[in-house]
Image (cartoon, rainbow, N blue to C red; front, side, top):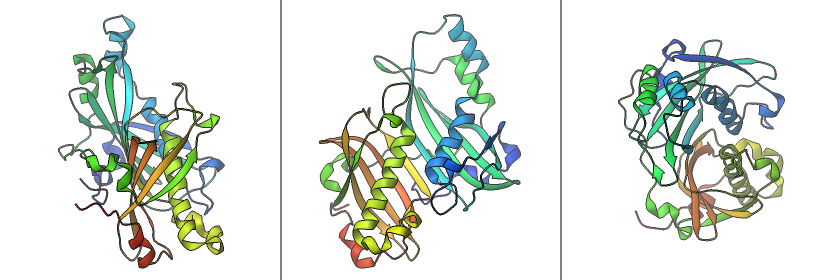
Length: 293
């Protein structure tokens, strides 16, 4: 599945989701252009997802019937279907289970304003212990199956090409610096903060090509769609490089491939779609990845 393929969530109506919650938009959710940013969407989708309860599994763990485990966040996809945003406005978020694997499961979500779908998201987590991924217990599988969405037979997005983990794959790069506010309760840089880093890298790239005269218009180049894979722990305080490659473009859109690196180690990859604006074909050609496919 490529980033251009429409998610099944986009085909679902609000009532197709088994769980519904309301979230109020904040001033901080708005990008400089006055619309809800893609990074803010990821944050808004997080609240109802984390709040979803699994009664059988919760009882199993409370009774000591399951060994210590971790929930590892390994990937997410978030897409804005249409520009929207208003401080204090209430959006409704539907949440369900898109797919169930041996040791992982994937959430599917849709965001609705006045009954209209404005954004979709997916998030994949893995159950693990110190030795690695572990099989989902029957109690958790039963909880997940009750929340399963219709039309879940589509293939889950495959893992990124292994070459994406190589620093030389990316012709351009931007450096980002971790901040205290990026760190979550698990004492590493939160996955939503990392999404913001990819925004920074793309804006840095656009600024490099357009120059200072376009600085006030750079928010127009922020992506409306991301698919992210998390490969390793990102720590603070530290500086990281984000590799940038252009995988393609048309009249309106640029498709980016990005990689987050600590030295030579790749800690994550992302695919993004963003407005092309005034980025010329000549400039974009310079950043096409040169490793033959």
